[in-house]
Length: 186
Image (cartoon, rainbow, N blue to C red; front, side):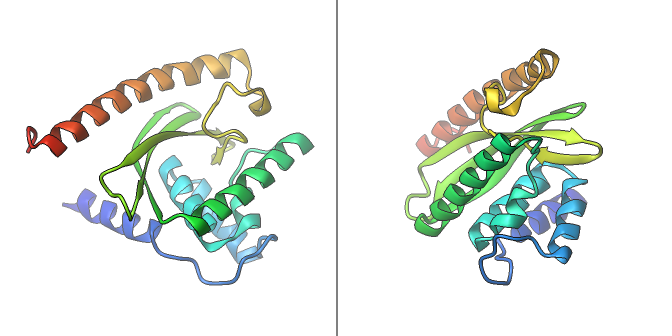
């Protein structure tokens, strides 16, 4: 019962708009909120990230990424800008449906559905790293192997194990949705 209530609260929070106009610079209260969220769970970070994109809060959204150099900073800025434009143009819902976590690495399964076509969906991955007790989104969040992320071979190997779990989950998730749609799974 408590888990169901917590899930409902998280889901309702993830779809609530954040007050305020579009911004490129984070304010101090938002930085504190980002810090608290980043210290919690990978799915909380991603849900917060999507809410910031919907609200056009570029600076705050960028603060949730693991950025170690100018190239990553530039790529993250472009990624966030594109995400804000995407959510402004599209009527899309996002929901983290599963988290795969091992040590300081996490891959989240993110379902994206259109309010216009709810029967169609995409299941994407979002990759995060725990950096000093704070979950951070990788600069190239859907492909941990991307050179831009600058992960070591050991870190890539850890993500490979999670990717296998994500791939199995995605296959089963897709099969279950097809069975539900056909009425074979109640």
